Image 1 (cartoon, rainbow, N blue to C red):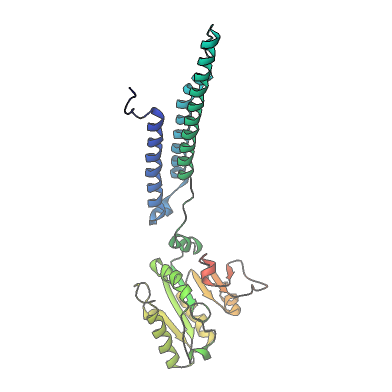
Image 2: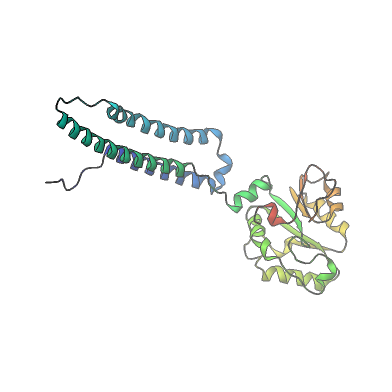
Amino acid sequence: MAESSSSPSPTEEIIRLIKRLSAYVAFKMSSLFSTSSIRNLDSRSIGAIAGLAIAVIFTWRAIRTPGERQRRQPKRRIQSAESSSVAAAQSNLASGGTEVSSSREDNAVQDVVDQFFQPVKPTLGQIVRQKLSEGRKVTCRLLGVILEESSPEELQNQVTVRSSVLEVLLEITKYCDLYLMERVLDDESEAKVLQALESAGVFTSGGLVKDKVLFCSTEIGRTSFVRQLEPDWHIDTNPEISTQLARFIKYQLHVSAAKPERTAPNVFTSQSIEQFFGCV
């Protein structure tokens, strides 16, 4: 009578152990990359995780070695030709089954290893922090960056917040002191801008308030705002302002469809703020 069931083999137990270990380590790595402790993750921590994975792989290979050697041992010769043929056939079937089983086990272990070393995709928040080099204060103009309009004259008729920029903008406000600023021609334009920002949900996250939206009547006034606030980053579309501020501001992002011929080393260029942070 055939046996109803058999206990798990050592190989199956090892595979299960590796899967549980990889799931645990993956959970720990995900926790590290999803919190502020990502700044404290040093080379020793990464080396320890990699070393643990390598130790598991070599242990697996060491345990499999005796079985492989046993399969390589020559079969005992049998004097009878008929018995020899039957034994050879049975040996071939057993060897074939063992090889198939071993191949499946190898594939299972390889799948676990591949899953363990699968790269962790960074979140938008992690990308923003990395791109801004951990800057804590950011100033940004509205026209051409946050708003669809590109001139103060257009703001007298309508104000449209670019929907594609909202996710990045709200992510910046989570850990940066963000100030928005723009030149307007009248008080009505100022009111329209604030209303459009409020309707788009810019003020609902708690990181940006209306008092941090500044208005001026000249381009020089916007430059003065930036100088007084002393941000780590300033985002603008006017190349002249970027050039003037290059000596005073640590980093700048110049938003333009065409890259200027000459830019300071601390001035970056992108077609949009979304593209700079990899959202498009």
